[in-house]
Image (cartoon, rainbow, N blue to C red; front, top):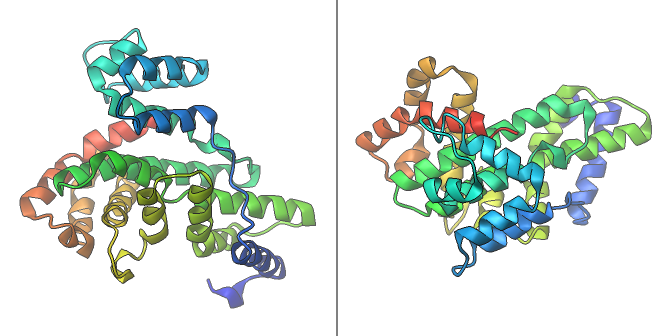
Length: 289
């Protein structure tokens, strides 16, 4: 599809989206308070497990989600944990922080009933990219802790675009074809995502990952996190498409992409990456809220 293929309503929505981007009048969904506090705590070198447990417990729904994920087969296949303190002690603050952020930043941030299924798909891919990002960063000896958040938010502009399309078409009393909405999503999501992570006060490393993940090769000073997210997003797409038993062949093709050579991952590293597919898929499924 191209601009010429858009219907009159498609062109009208495109003009509205373009104006929002040009004027930087993009409304970011409210960042859940507990997510903001968890992020702040994760960046505080003096924070401890007791503080993290207390913070998560302040939101009963979030605490329930975190414990459900922590007790899933992906993380604790042999024993159940009964408290957040126990989960943090066994799994570590970093992993529990990742789980809490993924559980609080979810599809409920957006209210676009026309695109509920697509938003769920986007979020599933984002979670998978986050989990793969940590593994890619670990094998390439880069920043593992930042990679989860970068992967989780790399496509945050996509559901935001769909939210605007939903609101605009409702206001105009018209419907738009899904194909057109997906075309506009692809065209504008980076610009929307960039503004959202800026408004949320995300670290520069996250902002760069969102801005450059699709075109890391074209920027003068390559953002390592953008490169990691680029590779992780490709792995995520393959992981979502297939069952674990079918993953090996498709992932062998994906790891031949130039980004993995750019990350200085060699044959042994790529073999290890492919072998992680079942573990990553299990983690991804566990984190879906």
